[in-house]
Image: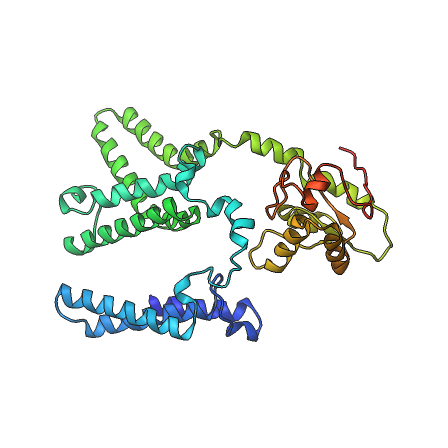
Length: 364
């Protein structure tokens, strides 16, 4: 299985891009780094399969030793490996951009909202089931195993450990770790479904009640996530504010803005507006919500945070900017607070632009 994964990832790396990218060292996307890590795992499990030491302690020692040696080797070959997927990330991007993106928040911030249940609910339910099914007595009559009882128990214990690991990182590091919860949860939820359907068989003396109970269980499993998504998220006010000042209002204006027939306007706009403006308008933007766009993000922040209007003018001219889009009801992103006195952005929000800027009115 591991060698099949390595072969699949290798084929994906070849198909993903031209030949120079095959050898690129990238930590935040699939690259040779990840392929090498899986190849080391395949070599280890192949050795363990054919030359496994006797006894649980011997196997555990081999696993820990291989883990440490493999990590050291990968760190030597790929400096920065131990720093994780954001090893190459510019440190200023965290306070300016990523700290304001929901997927990088710890999940415990969302526990009082319906999205917290959506993110964490399946994983928590699967963790309870996996922990319950760890013992043979609990599994009796609930699940059909083709494995010996000890190996089946270890399988459920490993699943519970993986779920617990992912849940801890989701709660206290960032919510994007819940991806692994959702990948692992179906194993536990399938067992819970089987248990629920089996329990409804106790109503076999009442066929209609048994059928109704089974239908209710299946409906709950199928529609439960959609019911959770329909609950209020607790962000109504912020959503209303974002809809009142959004790039959709800017698209018609840009379409009718006078320009030469072959000219593409260059627009300095809030960070999260970039993708929609590019997709829906014939314009270029400097920055978008993508951590690899560090140069554009830092440029946008530098222009708006400067306290010297002449410095802002020089930076805008250097990039050939045609328009600046300002939403006076919110902070600038990457983060420049609207009330940051003395900044170029604060002057624009308070309608005190320098003399070299012309105010362009826009309806709506």
